[in-house]
Length: 202
Image (cartoon, rainbow, N blue to C red; front, top):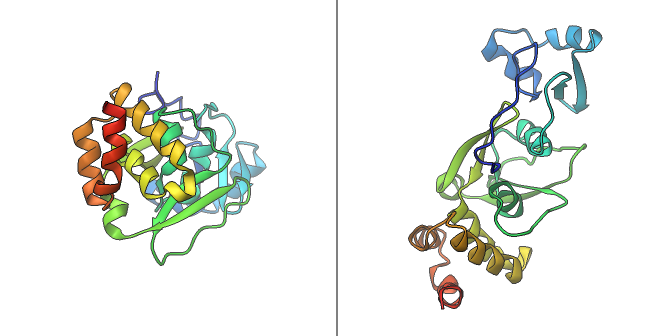
């Protein structure tokens, strides 16, 4: 069972995602100050500034992703964290990689280490998929887009990581050559990725 297709655990007695912000409750018809009552009753615990966790929500391997994406709802899970989510390569990053719109404020997440990158509107939208982790909706770059991003940021993540991601994505058929080339054109790394693609396919 892969991370991108795993079934979400039950939402618990409150019917909420595992992690939430008080301001998100209005859409559910719940007053934000209800959180105070839930904390007193032991149904909810504060895990970070402005972030709460439902106590009886089952934890999964996506616990950290769920917590960070709840705190950064406008972000996109990317690079090494997206590789890990899609189970491409062998990376197990000690931080959660998130893309946020260029010029926006990077939310401060104290409980989990987060590495931010700033993207243009085009990059924030292209090749991005909607997923859910422990009831928390979030966005993540597709396998093809993730591989291409690793080449675009190869000085940051390492060329060896990018090469491993490219090889494994094609071998496991999580991304086709056509999809990778299309994504490479959009993010303007088509010329730089072609020699490595040829080497993998040789």
